[in-house]
Length: 235
Ligand code: F6R
Image (cartoon, rainbow, N blue to C red; front, side):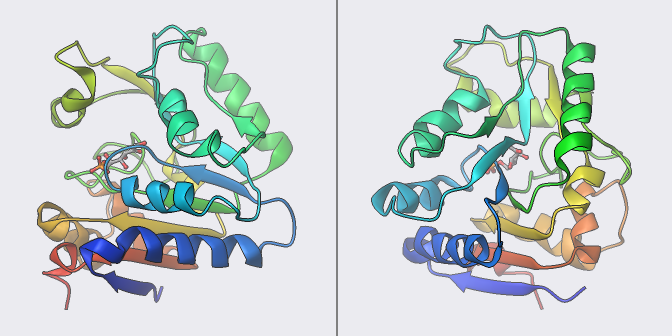
């Protein structure tokens, strides 16, 4: 599938991501259902949204969440999104995962929700150094749906900086690659030289569950907003 690359300067990345996001929101004829990620990749994008909060409204759908935390724990991804985007933009409709619920019951609830409401209209995603998307680690089937996953040591190490020396949970709930494939519009945010190799492999290497992000090669309506260091290996 052809995709659209928006190459940005570091300083302009958030602004360009917001433009692509707002244009896509405006193209959806109903209240868009939007998946948003946490992590460092979307930070400038969220900053730009906070700087210009008057944008079309949307419903937020959670992408992934640690398991086993109290629902008030500030380290929950849902709280992160609340602080960075949803509260500043006054987004009221939120489909979030309950970290403290029985994991199997929670997965059943999420699957039932998607059966009733259908796929998201848009997914904004980041890519992990190992090619993961959400918490779909290497080896995740492209047919996978929302489920409980065990995090790889690499992902635990990558997330350690958000835990102030505390122990990063080892289990999480994530939407699956099949959930992401059903989305009409996808915006991939990529920043920094460290992501150059995995971005290249995801878009130009074999399409394989060993690189979960390689599903993007077959994805319709894909926009990649990437700074120049992240694009260094792209043809
Ligand atoms: C977070 C998520 C992860 C990140 C990925 C990149 O909700 O789904 O897949 O998008 O790990 O993380 P950063 O942006 O911190 O490099």
